[in-house]
Length: 378
Ligand code: NDP
Image (tube, rainbow, N blue to C red):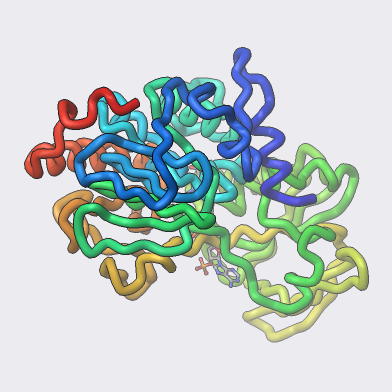
């Protein structure tokens, strides 16, 4: 029940003949110059590409230089790549070892324009990725370990490879939060999950619980009714953050029971989830609920760790933007959920990605890094 792998399998499912490899090392398995639609130029390991000079990529380790480096591969990052590629910025996307962002662990997406019947999150991200690659984006499914944003060229290191770039777009998104109790961690993958899309199938004819009171929790609960006999929604307060339409659907669903003012104190079970120890926050009463699964849907943490010391971070942990998509560093742009705690939608993240790419393009032009300087590189 590995969430990411399962989601990755779904991402590979045919969608109008489209097959995308989202495995952790999918990028490295792809033949150089093959699926990406361009031929990277190999340079000697350790050789430094001149800033603004030809984009370059070593075959093994070494240095990769590009005009536009995008860190992150959710809707913001991949939209930035689509726009950047079409502006001839030859983007390199460092996509992370679990590429695709939050939509990879989202089931039905019903509010992304253009899909009147809805679309599965992983399928939507497969389309984003295919579109970015179609225009020559190079995508590596690696985590960035550290960055140096002192100035042009900017540096990023991932899996032993140093990347340099004339401009950077940070689109690292946000990660799922967990309750943080020991039994939750111990039983993760043994009945505890943060991804209904990935793991719901394993709970056919079982009774399960979902924690949270936002749209994610309601979406997960509704999705899980396809499998479970009963879905208990556990929320720590009386009122819910979720949109009214999602709440109404859950209230009307015969398989969903909503329990306000409830927190999970322990997940019970030796080898797999057998029950929950619950506490009523209003009465203080402690109770046991027999369930075989627990889905955590309590929000996200922005992925800003590697930018500490370089970019401004607000008290909630989100990156601070200046002038729409800018940062305190010229040439470093920010897009998507890593800064947006207000809207946090796939479509707003995508819009943000397009804005960041346009801003990066204009900034590069102002710096004399133009299409002409590297047009023949790839
Ligand atoms: P939210 O931050 O909106 O909600 C998180 C929920 O988890 C809150 O109800 C919060 O409780 C609860 N919570 C947080 N920490 C704990 C904890 N330690 N223990 C118990 N409960 C906890 O996150 P979501 O992921 O639901 O949504 C994020 C954004 O994405 C929202 O803007 C949402 O609208 C959007 N979204 C839209 C979807 C769609 O349109 N299809 C689908 C999914 C998400 P409390 O309220 O008390 O703080």
